[in-house]
Length: 534
Image 1 (cartoon, one colour):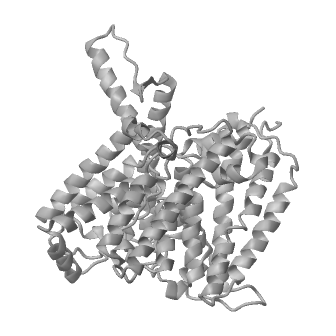
Image 2 (cartoon, rainbow, N blue to C red):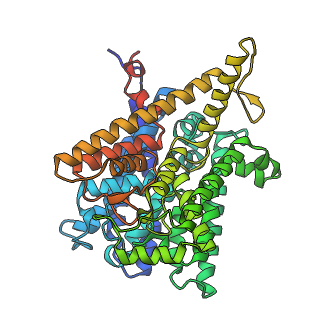
Image 3 (cartoon, rainbow, N blue to C red):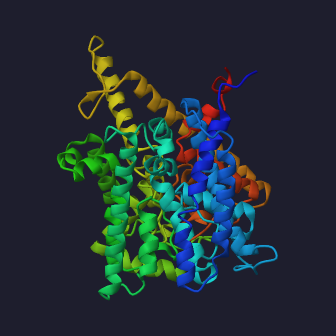
């Protein structure tokens, strides 16, 4: 049987992306030189990625990109960059044979499965980690900045960036961006798709730079001595992609209240449709206030924040005693309760921060919410499934899908009472095509089915190796990886890690992160016989 897909063309374009992935590696090289660390892990990775990229490019010097090749190229690109992204971790842990000594010989990232997990979590902006001890002192400033940079590169999209800067991808760029962009579709901002990609990345870069300046300003002003230039850059690189990797073991809890309040609006922006933001910044600010999805997004954030703030303020948001096996002790719990309960500002700040962080799938933590009571945790678990807006860097199901589902349910109730009525579902004043509504239901059902099946598989795999986790912990681990959220509850809480899962379990969650970032359907399409047959 002759294949209908020109896989050589797809691999050729994957090679083009890999070849240019060597350029971002110059940032950790610069950081390594600044802090007196070795540059070997990054130079070795640059050599490998250029060599492999050029080799793939030669498979089809003049690739002809069709829709099928586009789907394959996007899926393979994300696997390839995750593999390349793991190389600096492995080289740092083991050294280059006959050339260097290991930099961090005790690092958990010396295990190939752990390195691939961390790299995939970075590029997919999940934020789940296998680092039991997160510190620049142990792993090095350069390695940690590479860890943050992988999230920033993956936030707006590797392929979207490639379309923006590589002329060879401008033809067929629209279908590539549509296959990669998180959400039901991507709005074309300019006549040329490459210009649209550049506009999205300009907005993304601008907000990243602004956040870095504001955070570092706290250090300069003497407000937050811990928010050094390095930390400001690291958190700027991981907020806008809704990634959540922090070089601090206690995440954002390590910083002042002022730093936490500064990060909140940037997480909200990161969870907003960037095309909508671009329209608002370039002369049409009413587009933001008139957009029904944006209003629904803000309304959901406000409602969930109000519930959690009330629980924290009254004390009902905390457990009365520290359960066994959690990541905090009784003293921590007592301090947290006394600092928040009946205090308006801390209750509102932590409620706002955690709801925004979880719903936008950023995954930062302003405190260990593993110390919260089940009602407060269930609110966060619910927020994991809502996600950000379409066209944002956020993951999960997405606000627009829930909005359309609610409107279609309301339509069905109305037409049940008025059988002869014709009432289309409208979004932004436009009637939605019934096929689009059906597609939203299909995606949501697939997402939920994959979630429940994966929860069972991960739970039984953990039991297979004698690693005891609760059903809630298994659910939160799957929701966090499939939805690209990062932290969950219990052993995978905000101050915990995924290190204790089996290699099989971690590789399974790598697949969930990959599938979740590309929103399931582009990957499932590759598994259908109809895709490959002529």
